[in-house]
Amino acid sequence: MARKKMGEILIDNKVISQGELDKALLKQKGTQKPIGKILEDMEAILEEDIAQALSTQFGFPQVKKFSRHRFPQTVLDTIDTESALTHLIFPLKVDKKTLYLAMSNPLDMALQSDLSFKLAMRISPCVATPDEIKTAIKKHYLTDIPADKEELTLNILLVDNQDIVLSAAEASLKKEGYAIYKTRNGAEGLKVATQLHPHLIITDIAMPRMDGVEMFKALQANGDIDDIPVIALSAKTTAEEEYNLLEMGFYDFIPKPINPTRLLARVRRALRQHNHK
Image 1 (cartoon, rainbow, N blue to C red):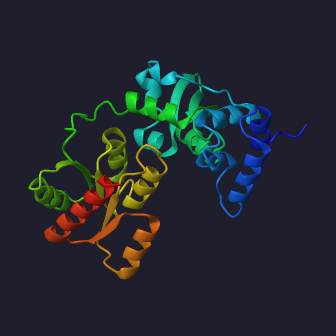
Image 2: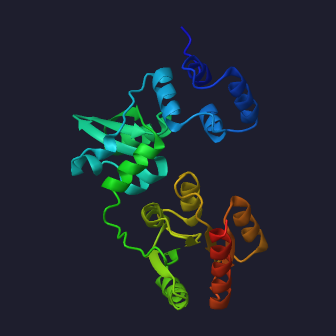
Image 3: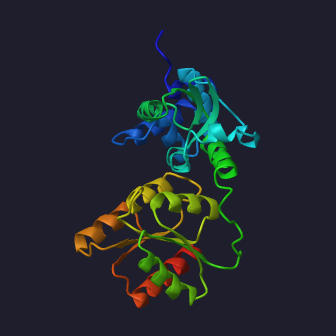
C-alpha cells in the first residue's frame, strides 16, 4: 500500500481543507520548501500538526513534553550545543549502541548518517516540535550563560575571533551605554544569541569552527531569534562582497578595519529602526 502524503493525512485529520492544500501546493511550486512548512507559513497548521503528520506518515515515534525531564550528562554529551541548535535535535536516551534522538526533521538522513559514523551508534529518530526541542536545549545546554541582562539596556552581541577587534568595538559601544557580550566564533555566538536574544548582533564573516554566514543561516532558521538584525564585518571590502551579504539578508555591512564613527552610526541606525518596527 502506498504511503499517504502529508497533505492527505492533514485533510483526513480535518486539520486543513482541500482548498488550503491546493493553495499551499501552488505556493510550493519552484521552491524547495516541504509542504508542511508552506502550510505553517500560511498559518493553516501548527508545529504539532506537522509532527503528528510525520509520525503518522513515516511511523516515527512522537515525543512530547520531554524538556521537563532530567537527562544524564553522558546522554547530553553525545550531541554538542552547536549541533543541537543548528539542526534542532536533542538526545533522549542511549540504549546499548542506539541513540534515541528527538528531531524536528526526522527525514534528515544525511545528518543521521553523519552522527551514526561519528558516535559509532545507531540513530533512532523521534519526531518532536521545534519549540519543544528549543525549550529542552535552553534548559539542558545553555545553563552556563548568564541571563542577567537589564531590561532597559540595549544588548549587543559581538562575534569575532580577533581580540583586537572585539576590544576596540566593545570600547566604542560601551561609551554609548550598550551592554556588550562577546564570543570568538559563530558556534558560541549562536549559543549566546539563543539564550539572551540580544537587540543586535555584529559578526565577522571569516571565523574558524562556524563562520558568520553559517551562524546567520542558523539564526534565520530559528523562529525565536530570526528577527535579530545582524551587521556583517568583513576584511573583503569590495562592492561585490557587500552586495552578496546584503542580498543574503544581513541588515548592514561594515568593512574592516572598523572605523569607530561608522560603527556607532550603523549601530544606532539598526537599533533605532528595529526597535520602532
